[in-house]
Image: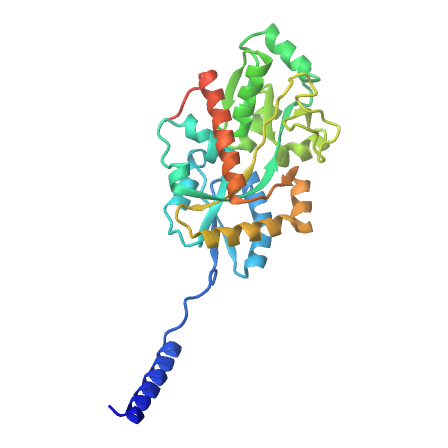
Length: 328
């Protein structure tokens, strides 16, 4: 082939390559369509309300809708299974908390998912605390009075929580252990049912999220004896901590964060993490969380993984030590 013909051939190949490049679109950058955010609890509960605060800002940051999908049931396991079963492409993520990522790993004899194998931590989003409350007309005025009443009548006092394995339940078991009292645990299907029985005098005390009972405390409809945090919370500044009230070293945190299906590309996880941290830094989210008694967290995926591992061991030790009945 002559040099002139070879040059012409190169020109034809270059032209064809250019046409081919324009005919085949480049792979779209993530995200280019709505993201589903699974919440393993019913609409209106603390996880749902708190998640909506964050996902609203997350949607702005990512430039696509982030749509909440509520999947309650089985102590949060149904929602986690929904996340686990979706493609690891960044278009399904969800809420994971101390119950589903830590407590359930020991509380259930056969958990239908493996936190390490099936999920990837994305970000620790926020911390929420429980409030120890009694009916407004209860003769019990403080934590010392509650402990004294329980010791005077072993096995007679009862406490409730919005479900087995919740921080209300686990926090109550920790209180029972640290205060060395004998009381009866009554599980409920959600916070409203437990609160109704407390108001009706059918249980003696209740551990419930500050987002649910804070307004009732402020309105004088229930009496708060203590909060579960290490320090007093801004929502209820006059209410002492359990540590201050004589149960030294007591602390429980109803933390929550974001997880994705295992195998989600690291670059997507990092982009999600950055967007979540940015959302948590906004005034809208910080103020919204504060009104519910929660505080923003943030950090790296590795930070969240360390929290999950640490809390798994803590609650596993409590469950085994206190011989708390495990679930099928």
